[in-house]
Length: 127
Image 1 (cartoon, rainbow, N blue to C red):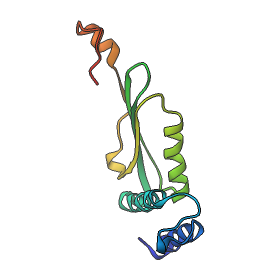
Image 2: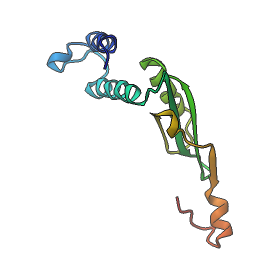
Image 3: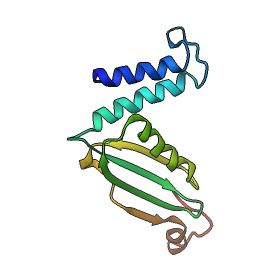
Image 4: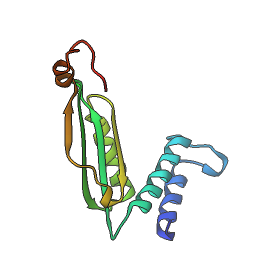
């Protein structure tokens, strides 16, 4: 982590209570740990100021999808917001993460319910 990122992290921790003693006024130890991990993930994924934002999930109709997009490296707060938006709009299980630009997911989807019908077992869907 750079010195600037460490200063930002210290400000986050200081704002959330006495983090050195494990006492927080808002949030929790997990929230701080998640921010630290996200900052580390962004730093590891950054290639020439760009990262890949990948999302995979399945909606309520058993359509499984993947997509990724290469974007300029976001700030820590913008990155957390992007992930929260994906979770807020999810209709089923979803996972969102940052990776190197060359590892961006292709835009694909599979209709698992239709595949089950075509395979002759419409009463069960294998995810």
